Length: 377
Image 1 (tube, one colour):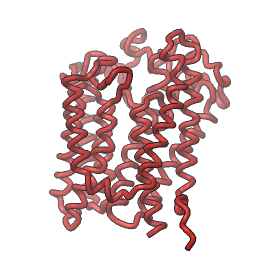
Image 2 (image 1 turned 30 degrees about the vertical axis):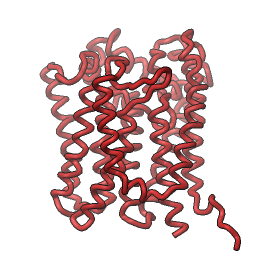
Image 3 (image 1 turned 90 degrees about the horizontal axis):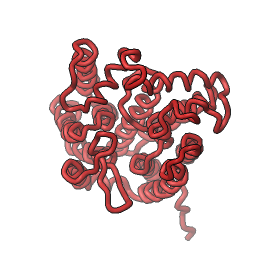
């Protein structure tokens, strides 16, 4: 009897979109760092390529596994993520004003990024246990309460960008699970209320948010008025807008971005949080538009996988991944063009960073598992 190919039922469009975005990321990271005199920055593109290889190992490991097994262990992974968030507050290394890293010799990772996928499977396990009560308001409250636990611990670091992802993930999970639309206003309303409170507290009254560092409060202030500190906290957003605007339709060319090359766009963030600014300057509206279309196409693939999932678990996982990646995509691109405040959040598959890249590729592995189970089932 002929053995079925392990590649049967593979969702190739999402796989090649993911690889394409990763390839663009390595190229733009090289452009953003090749002129730096710092050794760690000059080697960033090589490190990113190595992390793509590591991410592929996570991707294939999850793609060829049964996603039900991860959901059944959801509480274990959620608890492990909470343990790591507590550990980083005690033993973590402070980088750029936030205690976000745990290091073992030369190897380091960010527990807040790991928590995103731990929350995904933990929240899915919670909602599966409430299967018969999905339309009840207390189910929504339970999931929002679960999300507030990592949000609180991540804000203690403080890392506002990572904390901002969990409520949209909860929204995606609830929407995919079939919660009543009026109940979905709870996580949405909580997020909007938080934004309004920040606007009034910092932008209108000029006060500081107590759990954020001074430089983070200044970022919010300069979002409302970039001229408040044009040579300080307002510098980065001004240079980002100049970089993207000067790229024109087709860009200045690969490795020819003046704002990046001469350090007007700070090199310590150009290859990470502001990678879209580097791309926009060198590849112009055409390159930036294609990147946005690539991200949008991948999100549509995830939505399609969720719609065609064979069961509730698959739909929930797809909804959570969609919420996570869309939030990163929207905030990252938005902050480079002054649509949202600078929060320090990476662009999926493109920005420099091993932990987040591995988490994104692992999440896409879960999407492949859902698709394969449907086709093989």
